[in-house]
Image 1 (cartoon, rainbow, N blue to C red):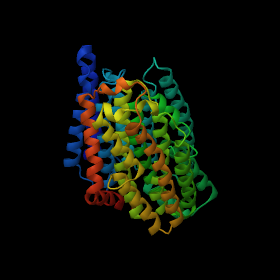
Image 2 (cartoon, rainbow, N blue to C red):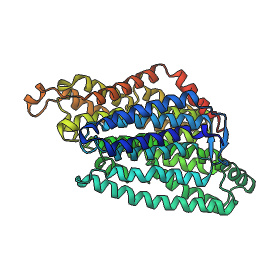
Image 3 (cartoon, rainbow, N blue to C red):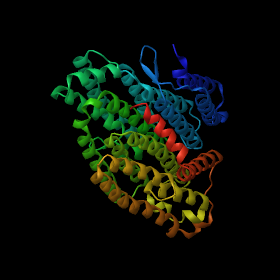
Image 4 (spheres, rainbow, N blue to C red):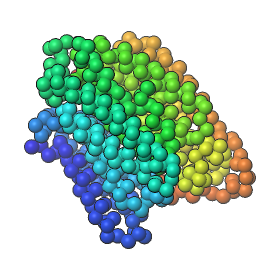
Length: 476
């Protein structure tokens, strides 16, 4: 057995056990250190996985997981996102001293890693549920907060329903082909050709995975869940969890359903247009910054789907690169919200008035994050959009690229509207502007790393895009 194929998952489980054991014996005043331990442990797992990882395209454990560059790239992305989330959870009321929070996040992280490397329907379903169940709990983690408990309950109900639909699609695939292995499934579908039952199975699978990436019409849960969930959890949901959904979606569409590509590309193009258009238009009316970021997250799912519709290596490479930039950018945006809401106690956009005078460095971080989300050069968000649109043009989906560009212009308005409040508006109580807004050390480190990453990957994008293209090559 090739244990190197699941080395990151094994190390994360060891870290989770360590955190759980220390949480049981440490006194309350020392438990804040669990955040440092989780982030530091994940940094070590990241380094070991990067140095020891040997992606050779082989399968392990009777073909259940695949050890390729795509899997390793996404695993590193998830680990990085979880480490940053652990730092943002420190000093957040209700999370900072709760060891079970970090353990649940680490268990969900194991599931995400397995989603990225799954090569079998059984492993894919186990990985998706291992990811989802801890996230249901984390969304409703603040039991004294009515919005948080409502968030967790809604996420559980909708997630369970779509998971059942997806599982039925999996069972149909097995019933039609007699196998659960991805490669054998693709060969069987190619041999038998498209059929109504097989297209039905594809639709059922897209329902479950469309929910994971919050694509229209399966997006309805995201605004309420993001608003009610603890802000670090909302950031984790909108980045790492969404990236995991795209990781498994890439496997399904580019491997299993590749023989049916002519049937599903137009469906996916329509979903892409609906997702980015609805996400951007509804964002224009938002007054709550977490709901705005939720609809923004929906819109970005639409942009990413363009790369899948292109159905070429450039498109898949652009999807991977986009997810790297999106994770850096959206975590920075949610991290800024964590810091501000901790002091101000409000998530209304109007509460950000005067922030540039209270915390100029934090305001500059928000500027970088929101301009990157809007796709302004030379930030990573701009480069990611260029590659996705270029892939669509190369594949003769020119009208889809044009719709994407028009939606990016719409998105620019509401991002700039938030920055207008931050930099130009004055606080209702002018005395508040003279009070500095404190930023704790963990939050400053996390935000600093993310802003540096946004600038670095945006300006020096070639090595990162080459890595993304290398990851994409394994699917072709």
